[in-house]
Length: 148
Image (cartoon, rainbow, N blue to C red; front, side, top):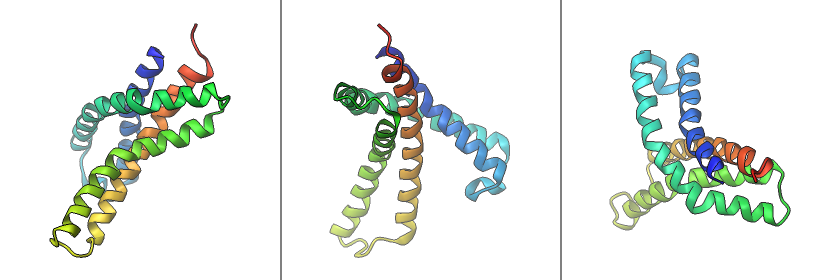
């Protein structure tokens, strides 16, 4: 389980680095007019912030759920990876849901702003991407080929 935890934690910054590099190379969205040093600084920042979150989510939910699935006989990758994607999005969905919901309840904005919803969806997608790869790493190390 320790190696799986390490693999899952390291997979998240690697997933961010690969995604940001691809978006920079393809000139998509925010990355379209940025120079590589700025993108590299963002990769470092996001990697540094995401690793503790990945560690916490893996310890608190991902690892226990993965082992429970394996205990019930579900050792295939698909369920583990889907749960990883859902768990990766969860912190962003909770936070953004709280912000958008608070704005609605306090009548700051009676209807959610579409731009805010799109930003929340992008963050949730980034979390799903990271959760998917974190779960892939954890499954490969701790579930598929368990160490004795």
